[in-house]
Image (cartoon, rainbow, N blue to C red; front, top):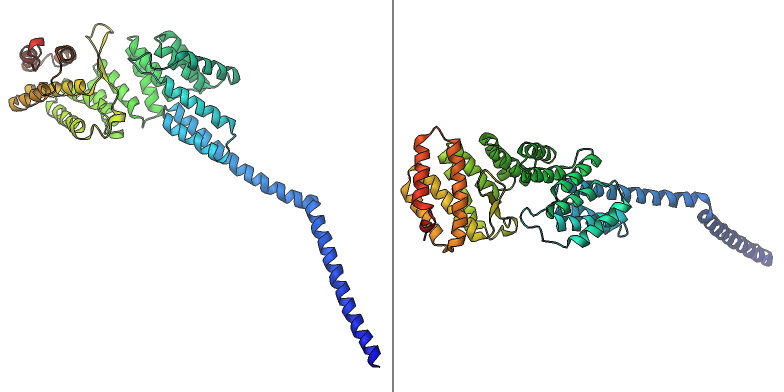
Length: 387
């Protein structure tokens, strides 16, 4: 009896173990089967598709944003967007290509008065190779325009810029702006005004577009509009010196000498207190026509020259206001810079051009015209310029 119970007991154990082993075996077979069946593959494919979709959305977003930044002329921002793409997809050919373009853009961004600041042959070869690869890319024609422009081929530059504009469906602010610069050089001021206005309309928060539109209004003697756009340029970037020169002259031509002097005081504070801090964005020199009848330009390229001109221009404004103390104060500041006669003569030419414009704008104000002549005779003769 005991033997029978022992056998039955062991039999139950063996059956249990057998069932457990069979269950484990079938579970293992099931797992293997699951992993090699289409259901598992479909799950994996779905996950990969989701990941690819997220990556594509990310790269497309930053790619489109980068291109829009390039259209607006904001190369540093565009470079940042294309770099973000390579951080998640280091083999992305599109981002790599546009980073090359950003480098070319920085290399060919037009320096109005310096035509020899880069290796144009290397740049031309790079552009030609890229145009063969993608002949309908508006950016390539824009850079080609920059290259032609920087070498003085103005008609070729306009052709390239127009091609860039056409290929971008008229959405390329930087191309409009560059074309406006060429128009200005060719003395086509109405066309220049039109193209600068289009650039501002497409990229209203770019300070240089507002500044250059203001410059064109100033050239066309529309001082109300020039003050409006100089003000916008200053609001967009209050640490840039350039718009302050234009806005103070515009207010002076409008006869608002108090506001002109206030803007000049702000400019002088920026120069004397903050200039070094913001030096990278104030390195562009100042260039003016030698007179209103030709396209020769005279340029102030160094900080001392620009500061000297600023002091003299401010002295002129205070002289017209009848403030003799302030006039002498700024003439003394200019004298303390100890510029040589050659550099002083450049300031004299520009100030005479400013006075010419002011006298024309305020021709009915005989008192003001007489005072400008007094200032010219007393302080702008070459041997009397703060010697």
